[in-house]
Amino acid sequence: MGIGISLHPLASAVAREGGVGIISSACLDRLVSRRHGSKVNTYEAVYEEVSLAKSAGGFVGINIMVALVKDYNDSVRGAIDAKADVIISGGGLPLSLPSIKPPNGTALIPIVSSTRALELLCKKWERFGYRPDAVVLEGPLAGGHLGFKFDQIDMESNTLENLLPPVKAVAIKYGDFPVIAAGGIYSHDDIVKFLNMGADGVQMGTRFLVTEESSATAGYKKAVINAKKDDVLVAERPGSPCGLPFRVIKQSPMFISALKRLRAPKCNKGYLLLKDSTGTFSHCLARENNLNCFCICNGLLSAAGYNSDSEEPLYTAGSNAWKVDKVTTVKSLMDELTGVSPLQ
Ligand SMILES: Cc1cc2nc3c(=O)[nH]c(=O)nc-3n(C[C@H](O)[C@H](O)[C@H](O)COP(=O)(O)O)c2cc1C
Image (cartoon, rainbow, N blue to C red):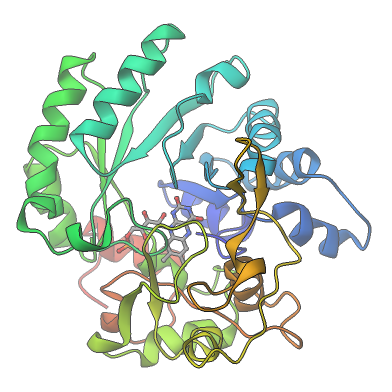
């Protein structure tokens, strides 16, 4: 979970409890530089965060979003050099991932939301002689960016339950790699349900957002706890400058300001760049207009406590966030999810 929510404290806690702890690579250079009090680049920041998360043992990986074009290759190299167990990559299709650096022992796991995307990716990766080590199938109830067009989000054919069987069939066709289901999975019973349907694992975000080990600010955790069902919505206009639907808690201060057009167009971060007419990744829509976009990098950085005195926070969470009613620890959450202890 980015930006700055899943850092090494959360990832290593999950790994210690037998899960695969996943760091977010988003804006890590800024976050680690602040920790050091001196500038580190993306490669160094990723290398350090993965190493710290691994030092407590267990399986640790990193999520690297394709949409973060400027830092993508350096993040991949840093993660592989630090011997991350997995790289999970979505927010766009990671078509070039196996070609960036030989992955050695690092498993490469794309995120898809359709059979079409998985077919395309498998064909492309075949040209590099690489088959996905697993795939995350993310349905429409997830937090963060969604891999659907706005009008596809509520379609019955796009529920995670309905997407899983055909995606599993594609995974079998291309070498029977594991399929990890994600998006809206909340309880032990949900996990059992998806495993019984053929999933080989699950990926969960929102439940871990509101743990003691999560690096979200107290204000972020409170916003999730206070959220009611109707408070978690998919932002369209204004939305994310990268054009993908983005789920928000509607009380997020930056979202409210964006709705009222209170914030002047501004982007001084430049992580989420779009292509210009020459095909170069050079511009961010949030720099040009505040009619259609909020400034997602600054909003999410503020939600993680970075520049929070000068920028308003933007909170994202999965559609089941309204069910979360308290901060817990990773240990008790993992005990609940694995069925060791009953519902908290
Ligand atoms: C706060 C938050 C931040 C997230 N950030 C990212 C991200 O940086 N990259 C990504 O691929 N997915 C991101 N996601 C999606 C999660 O990785 C996960 O797939 C999804 O939230 C699962 O659904 P759940 O939250 O209902 O468990 C984020 C989700 C949340 C809640």
